[in-house]
Amino acid sequence: MSAFVKSIDKNHLLTVGLEGFYGPKTPKSLTMNPEEWASKLGADFIRNSKISYVDFASVHIYPDHWFHEEGIDEKIKFVSKWMLSHIEDGDRELKKPVMFTEFGLSNLNKDYQPSQRDRFYKTIYDVIHKSAKKNRAGAGALVWQFFVGGMEEYNDDFGIVPWERRPTYILITEQSCKLARIRGLNQLKGYLKDLCLEGY
Image 1 (tube, one colour):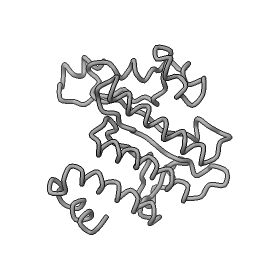
Image 2 (cartoon, rainbow, N blue to C red):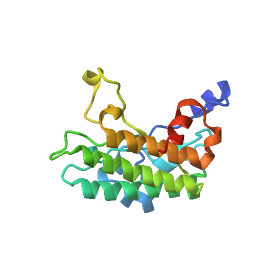
Image 3 (cartoon, helix red, strand yellow):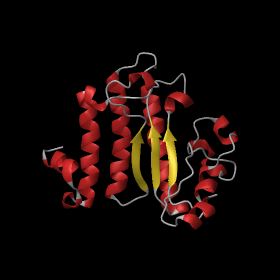
Image 4 (cartoon, rainbow, N blue to C red):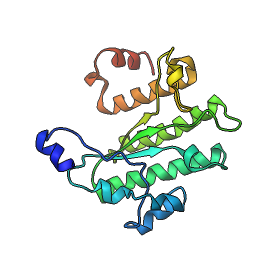
């Protein structure tokens, strides 16, 4: 399918849209999966992402779906290892960018506090920022999911309205500005440039 899409539009960026689980073709990486079940789902991060027409690898981060008994500290520790493993694979094995195309922390967790979500986001953003500063494969991370006020009825347990919680809004804005500074603020236009010049 990727070859067909590229035959129509060679400039169209393609990815597979995987969770990022390692499969049996990469036995040395199986220990990075959340649990043994992940290798039996029919997906294989390396094999699927290596396809020459695939422009960047994609990975998701949903520790709440993968671990049901662990607390926030264990989940965050896993997330760091999970990300670093995939970034290293992007650098060494795939030779292409790795985008963490969905990440979220559920507000239905037992004893959930909004500060836990901020900590979770910060962990992910710090890994991406370090990767970007060194021009490594970690290319970015996209929150699942943003809403504007009044759309809460469409919310799953991961959605947020960023500006309703100032610490979360600042964290997201600071990450955008930190990544923008790596490329140079003079390349930015409009609102983001003004926002970053305000000190974020």
